Length: 90
Image: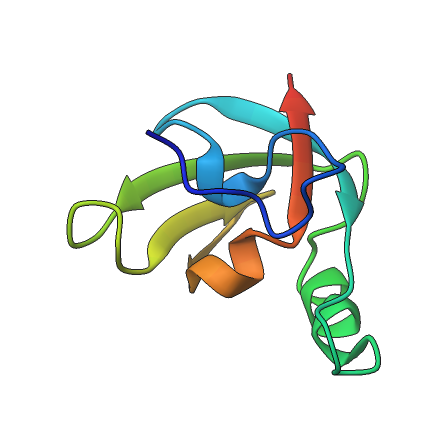
């Protein structure tokens, strides 16, 4: 069962995306109490609306970090970060 979204008023977030499913980033949300710093950092790394994204692997039965591909880059992401990225099916 997918983890609850950090933003209950939104759709599917990257941390909920099934492995190997390609999606498109719809929006990157701000984390609570960080002044938008994490959102800016994610966008600097290429997590921008309209970009295609894919979860390649989940570590520790879905409780650990995710291996995520955005564009031609691959990142290890914590669930906090991936829960800020809202996606739609590609």
